[in-house]
Image (cartoon, each protein chain N blue to C red):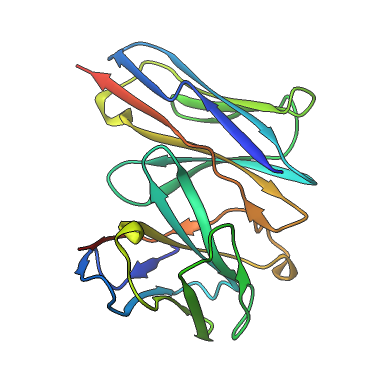
Length: 117
Length: 111
């Protein structure tokens, strides 16, 4: 059973603070993703990673960075949080095509609702 | 540019009704389309569709893909209050390796 966990369910930070959101998956998935979800805008991809130490920009990377030092862990970093980064953040993981099984299905963590004051 | 449109954006029905949710897409190098259900927290996987015309079924839920029309539908029969959720459609782009999410359809089922 795939399990994706995120470090916090709810987080409140102040403008200008550095914020770390952690995501861990226990299924040895190569691919990991960070999304934000806002009403009326759906899920938007921030960054993704196909392998350790590898990262790719998604559709809205501005104001964010990521770190993938270990296969199971993918961190999202807000260098200087701003009020427009108040959102629900969702992490997901999936298998790599090289593993020989369908890779398109992404499994999601429970989400972190971040409020920036 | 990749695009996904879901309709309706929201829907209110009564228990026992049947609903049809629509998803239209324009995606480069389309490979598959996924449906997710999202209640209070994380989206949970429902279906992955890769071939046109083949219905996938799970209990009261079913879905079908039409590659010619670049669309998919999700049907829910005999709806229950537990079906209340946001339903997300996400085609997968083979070019970018990304799921492209629609805005979602918010379904509310009243007792």
